Amino acid sequence: QVQLVESGGGLVQPGGSLRLSCAFSGSNIVFRLSLFGWYRQAPGKQRELVVAGTRDGDTDYADSVKGRFTMSRDNTKNTVYLQMNSLRPEDTAVYYCNWGNDWGQGTQVTVSS
Image (cartoon, rainbow, N blue to C red; front, side, top):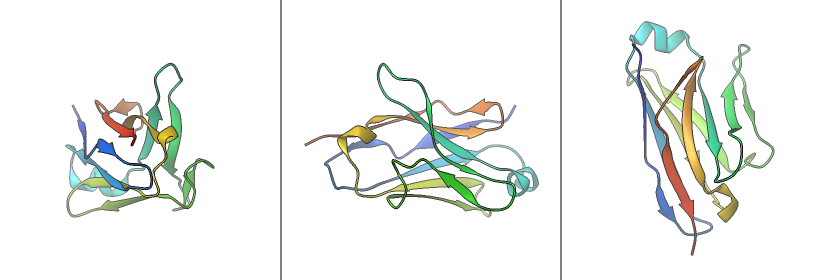
């Protein structure tokens, strides 16, 4: 069974940056052909899309993170990244990596002074 393992969360001050990683345990061939996404869930709220890869090679970002967050991938490491800059308190949430119907365990991001 494929596993997605997120890391990189933590406590950061407003305006700071974090880079989340999502390690994919499946084969490299599958990884290279796959689309991934990042979602987040804040306390008391529903899980929401942060960014997702699309079939035409593009990425769809939530309006709230456009210009601040960037998803990337390293096909040699089976890893997807989420670079988060200019973080705001409202970005506080558990962030999840998504692959089809599979999810990672999540990593907590807390933005607070």
